[in-house]
Length: 481
Ligand code: ADP
Image 1 (spheres, rainbow, N blue to C red):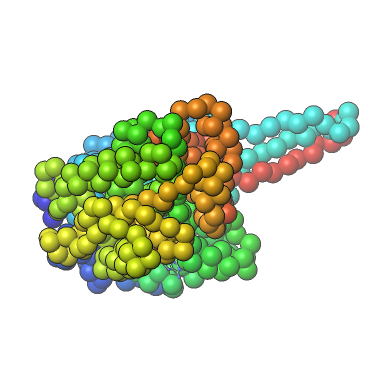
Image 2 (image 1 turned 60 degrees about the horizontal axis):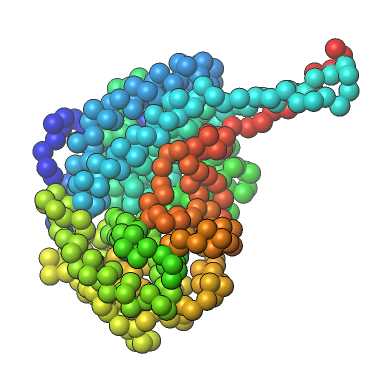
């Protein structure tokens, strides 16, 4: 790993009840080199129960603080994250693989949720409603829901944590985080900074280890009132079922299968840049990455040529190397899926126009790829690839493109490029997705509600909507007035 300005940010212990505990046992490896970076504890059900209980004990006093007091601690955490952004990004690139400039961008994005919800803490508002009788008044209080569990993925090791726990903490909840086994070091460095920021003990807890055992406790312990999860649809469904027995609120951000439609009136150069941003960021490993490109027949060949030429310029390598914009994929399983999708498509009549195979750098490096003549019936049309492959489908009519885009169980992000204002509204309203980028390949910001519909999820993170998720409404009828 690149040497850190503050080496004490590299932790090999979990953070429970304000202390770093446990012994490093499980390897964390660098996907670019295969080298072991550190070892983290292998915690299980007992430690998960302990973490939930300390979080429950801390909840009363944390929730009882004024919003301004909680805001001050969150703000201190934000300042520390920004002051240590270079080290945090170095840890992130080392364990996850994304290029260092992109890792810096993720740290800024992660921090933006902490800053935003430090401010938003002061704007959790109740209501006084018109009364049904003259001698009563109807009040609605908004109170923090209680202990929040967060189970997070490896593709955004920092942002998926802060996007969940910053609003929870701002609302007055306490949290137990289980980061992905591939990327625990970023999570533990954030915990160290939370400790320095002055969160009271038990307010923030982070534990690594046995996902099934820890997840089992987090979805069944009666003191956990909210389970936030970002990850695969299969695991999301399992956690939702587990949480049903104690009727917890479950917030899921699951897989996407984003369509990217280019109409014949689109600005093609802008569409190519949007495609690069939405497809190849994080080597295609984001749930909002475009997975299927639908391009109108009249501009199909031009778009494919421009995209292939642009993709050929993307430099692949270790994320710390100058100019690299494509790091390694997270693991061998990810590469196998990409290979499977490409060979299935080629077997069914598609052709490779850029990349198409493992990179000569070895490990899990893969050439950024464009596939032309993609068609329904290919695996790549139905399943999220989660890798740097752009399959391009041809369409002739607007309705055909919309039907194809909606022909999936997923409903997270969609993108389209068009100039006609009537078409923009028609297509926007017809797309069955939680988020739509219109003439834009970049949509994520703390200022907007992020989330999906259908099997992509059931909640929103970011914006003022993101904090409401962590509150319960309490209605009071004050009579006898
Ligand atoms: P991926 O396949 O991309 O790793 P997962 O959905 O398996 O996505 O992982 C997302 C998060 O869910 C990780 O933190 C992982 O450890 C966790 N996880 C996986 N399986 C379970 C489970 N059965 N119970 C609880 N958490 C789980």
